[in-house]
Amino acid sequence: MKTQKINKWLKRQGITKTQIARELGISHVAVVLVIQGKSTSARVVEWLKEHGCPEEYLRKGLKKQEN
Image (cartoon, rainbow, N blue to C red):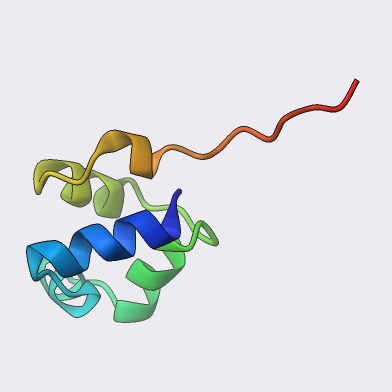
């Protein structure tokens, strides 16, 4: 996930991680960990998609392999 881009998008939309957590019935920390890429939750990712977060922000980045 692209943490900084997601955080900027949330701020522009006026959405807080606490709001997401309340709507999903999970902890604020759980939302933060998913956005940071330290945990996974299909529910959080789906919530972000449904609310218009660009999907490219939600994909895990592929590291370039050195030859």
